[in-house]
Length: 331
Image 1 (cartoon, rainbow, N blue to C red):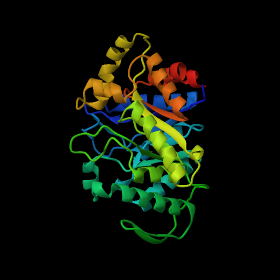
Image 2 (image 1 turned 120 degrees about the vertical axis):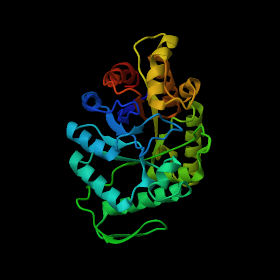
Image 3 (image 1 turned 90 degrees about the horizontal axis):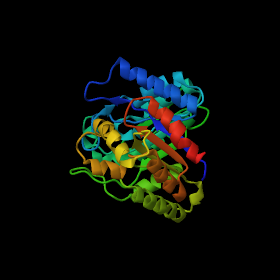
């Protein structure tokens, strides 16, 4: 089995049931420290508002959390997975990223995406119909600002002249682009296919973080389409990195039915009751660790190189289980 690199989505939920407080922060801190201990990269999720079509909670602001993680770690990478770009301004974002790179000794990974929740664009002055073009412009503008002084940019949505961000990092952080097929919710704009514009963005960046809100087979189908798209763009598909993110709740029992029963409540707490338990099982990695490892192995067989697993519980023991029961199978 090929060696697989691992990250963990830290459970930085802004719990809707009032569970966000000192004890929650103790657990977040311990989870980050365990990631450092086990060599697991620290990833954080971004949602400005609670997005009830898909989740039962919002999340803490990701760049602030990563600044906290930077102080608790020294070896592992810290990453946004993903940062919803259209709700941000590129000049302010570039300053935030440059600061985070400085604080972390350049361990930051710039995981990005256009997002999907219409309300988040409305309250920050844009529209969901603009999200793709705004995302591309922000990536271009931030790259300019982080790599050269006296930068100027003239896009449709963002313009600036002679802007210098200090301190700039010694190199541009890796850009990981999220995207892919998703089971659409009523009234939302996402579709069960990967769009050409999204594939353009992924191929240009060179690193793909595939979505978990579709199905396992859709992820593999999207990867095949991305490789073909890279060839059509004149790029060797071997230069693309296939990453995947998914939610999980790890339990010790080998019994599949018992494992599903144990992880149901944590999944419902994190995801809400908007989707059926059967739907959640189809998208996410629930059940026994053997079943989860088999599902990961299936993706590795398709070319997966990097996996970000997100516990739906803030129990730090989830990080230990990831390190001891999942990672050794792919070392």
